[in-house]
Length: 76
Image (cartoon, rainbow, N blue to C red; front, side):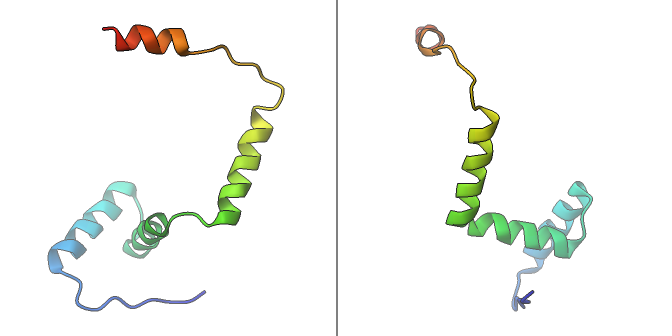
């Protein structure tokens, strides 16, 4: 797996990232990795796989229309 080195990171940014890692119960490295992965977004293959998963979960199900509920909510 490739590595990345980030130079010149602001001290406050590092402090906030460390605090975020503590809140989530992760190491600083893991928190930084997840943050970068989320910022980079999902690739086309990953999105296709997620859609296939959800399509399988909802296969054969029928859902009622939510139009009435939305209209009631908008009229408040």
